[in-house]
Amino acid sequence: MEYIMGKKLLDMPVNMKIVKMISTINECKGKQIIYKKQPKKTLEKLTEKSTLDFTLDSCENTVEGKEHAKDIFFNVTKPKTREEVSIVEFRDILKTVNNAYEDMKISSQTILELHGYLHRFSLVRGGKYRTEDNNFLQTDFFREETFNDHGVLIKKNFEERLDKYIEDLCKNYNKLIIEDEIDNLVIIASFILDFILISPFPENNIKMAKLLTLLLLNKNGYEVGRYMNLGKIYDERSQVYFKGLFTRKNDTEKFYYGVNKWLEYFMKFVLEAYIALGEELNLKEIKKETKTKRIEKIINSTLGYFTKEDIRELCPDIPEPTINRVFNNLRKDGKIEVVARGRSAKWKRV
Figure 1: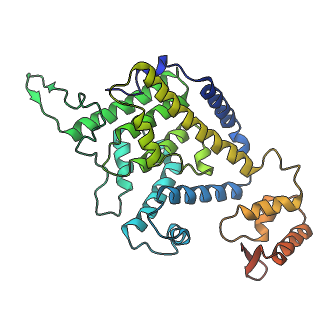
Figure 2 (figure 1 turned 90 degrees about the vertical axis):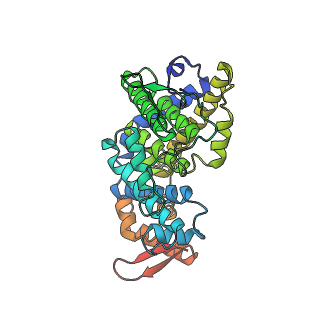
Figure 3 (figure 1 turned 135 degrees about the vertical axis):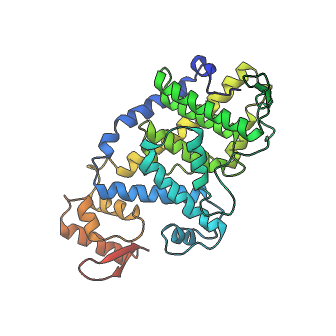
């Protein structure tokens, strides 16, 4: 059984618009060294914000009130319900994927472990493939008859066959990456599409698709997901839409059309994330902006409290009187307020 991760991928015609987006993304990847030269605190704040937004977007509608969800994320409030616990679970596994991706092999076992972590505090068991068909898969694969060395029919249940297919999918991915005949972005996108079409778990397949996207991008050097939120890349509606493009009756032309639609969707999202990252770091226009605008931009993008020392670290070229003047003006305009006075006064946006 194959959908995308097979021989069809190497010979598949790809829309030139997609080719251009892939080229631009790879250019952005080459500029990541510039991002890493930014102040450490700037990158840490971006990572914290992206992790927060990624988590909340992936756990939307589970908790009433965004501020309450933030309190759970930052351990200000202890989670009490299963929905609230899911925020903590997703936050922790997201951090793991960002910090330990180099040591994570692409295999069925890794995928099962990731899903298990999503249910670490749940009474519902995770890390286990579903046991029934979802009426979408080409069921001939799962009805395949396997015999042992003695010619005796081996009866495998659905879960065992699903595990075998996921493992084959991972092996195919690893093989294509090593062969290096297809752009890694196409391989990543195709792997994720296969995963979404299969939806191997009873629940949380969309969350898993997001985590696997982040993992594969990180492993292949595309670190945009570390600093920008990828949580909106898939949802239930996009899952239904793309599943609708692939049916057992699809001919080759329709198959290629469906894959190209998916690749365009995937590449556009990744490219927009890179563009947003460049704008967030303001790499191109930083010299053209006034010192006041630079300070205001930092304050507006700051999550939680901030101090004048934060501004001094991020903008060492801006003199102290200028920082004080901007803070005073913003306070008078009712845009910021002091919450802890003293030498290291803390401020927050109003």
